Amino acid sequence: MDKASVIGSVIGVACCAIVGYKASAGDWTVFWSEKGAYMVFGGTASVLFMAMPMEKLKMVPGYVKAFFISKGMQATQVIELMNTLAEKARRDGILALESECQNIKDPFLAAGMKMAIDGVEPGNIDATLRMEVLAMQDRHKAGKKFFDLIKTYSPGYGLVATLIGQIGMFSGLATAEIGHLGHMLAVAVVATMYGTVLANAVAGPMGDKLAMRSAEEILAREMMLQGILSIQSGDNPRVTLDKMLAFIPAPQRVKFRQAA
Image (cartoon, rainbow, N blue to C red):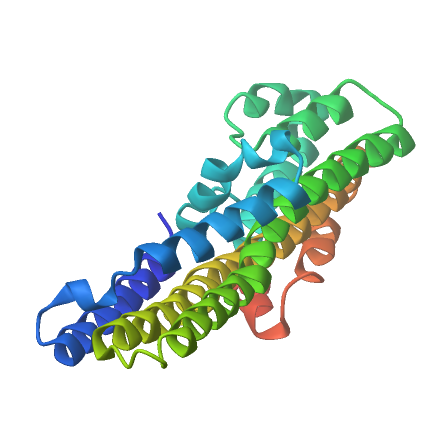
């Protein structure tokens, strides 16, 4: 579970709840607009179906899960694991790593190590694993695109609902029915709120988090690939470690150099 995602979500909901309670004096019905909900949520859903293929939309639960749960390895974890594998390969030979592959949870790293142990050419290992990275990037782009569509179009549908509400309000000016005018004005304002909250408090942050996760995972897999090729070529564990350390900021390298 990603604590930052949970904390941020809780803070956002709490702030909205506190402000909403104070503004409405506890009468939450003032924030409900059936017409606004139809326009904003229904309209945004229509955009998603128009812009994305059905097989991508079926993966929406996975996109949401990826926001709250991070399964990827951090750069420091990759360094520690690759350093351990390099030292064992140097000491006992690369074939000794076959038993270690069963304990590696990351499927990308496990597959790469198996190819290296089996003696697959370095060029083939590099090409195969890079195709894996490209496929992963495509999947991640679909998740980011899903939230970007919501961020882009939900405020627009909120604006459409606002305009419709204003038209209804202006059409009632002739009869001067205050209740009707107030109702249509509420539709306009609440619909704008729906679109704004959906875009800026939900879709925007979730999409940005997925983009950062994608970048982190790509970095981790590039580190794994370089480590695998280094181990297969028989490099000294110190050389393998130096290649891994090139991927992280200088201040984080100190503890690894001291341990080595």
